[in-house]
Length: 94
Image 1 (cartoon, one colour):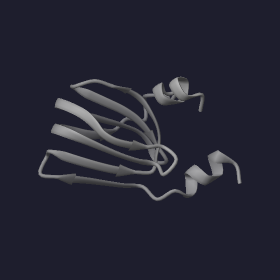
Image 2 (cartoon, one colour; image 1 turned 135 degrees about the horizontal axis):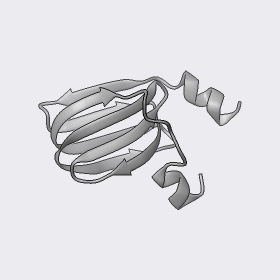
Image 3 (tube, helix red, strand yellow; image 1 turned 30 degrees about the vertical axis):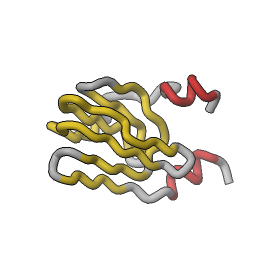
């Protein structure tokens, strides 16, 4: 099964706990991140997370899982952002 087909079948969930911990499944790649914004590609489209003091607590791309901690202010799908070779794809040759 091709990676693209596998990604489409991957479950996608977004769980926000107390605006401090965001758990996301169905993550394909992380496009960029800093303390104020995380931009990631999911099986359901591009997802923007904005806030303060954000940091990636855990990232397991093979499992499609990401945990972001910090003060989460916004979680939004943005179909106007096109995926490109993601940060972790470029770093790790994915």
